[in-house]
Length: 383
Image (cartoon, rainbow, N blue to C red; front, side, top):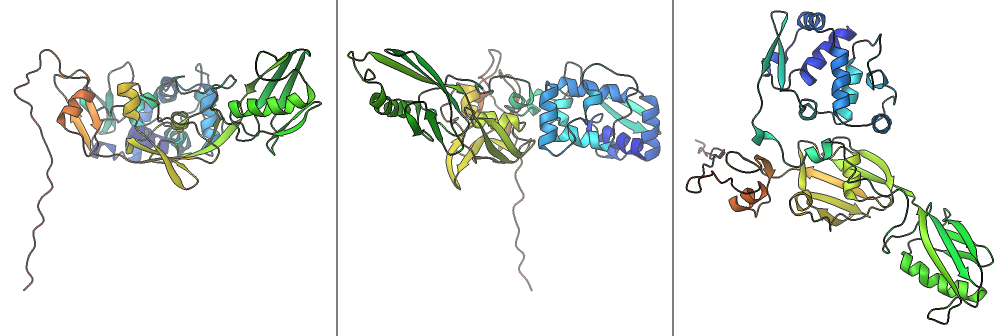
């Protein structure tokens, strides 16, 4: 039964991306026939996991975060190994939890292939879906990239807020030559030899520098502002702490994630696999202390390179992805045909601009707009 369950699950989740609903009703006998005709299913699963671009460490971390055995997919990682059994339903469930959706699994160098069971035999049909059916922006989170990985080590910008777990380096030169490594304690303070205890939690580096001028100047007379100083100091962040944030709503893998304290909303979104096919890319909320403190539009980053609203996260922040707004598909003589999510105030000109504009061969005299209009409600008087 286990292998038959896999046959049904695999045919519906992996091998029938474009099949109709009728072809997904596979009987156990048909599934057994397909398994016998496809002894390489384990290799196919391994190939699809490898094409996701996730590293082995990322796969294990995501499995652990979703409550699966971190070693569940180990037989399908790396090179092929002998004696690998056909995957079970738990493997398919784990792959879906990792964000290996049908759209991602079928997007590769090969042409899309649809398989269905007909009279106990596997029938293969090929055909590419319209390019306009691709939801613009989702592939950013489905591919392997390092553009959202925060710095694990310093330095950081002057606005960075210190907190428990950060590691600082304080260097004094001039009348004295000293170097101190300072760990911010759980209570939020550091201890400097011969100076004492300083509370630094939630201070920026600029504020910390002002505090050090006052406290170091009591012990080292040469520490002062201006040209008269005979002892100088520098302070920097050598290692960053991690914070726990929550990614909820319509994302591929919602849950709690530990990211670097220099991480932003994009970092958390990428760790969760990004919005699902139902999730919005235009109104991603950052909630802090029960209030919405920021709203992120991924299109600002993709179309204009503007990441100014991608704020740095703090421990306990919630990144919430709601249901997407109106989806409009644009196809034909445009530079970037795809399905775009539009705001209520955006017009046809905004859609064409998001698609990169018209190609030279496009006719500007005729644009065909197809729209599904809901039927008008009719009211019948009761007699």
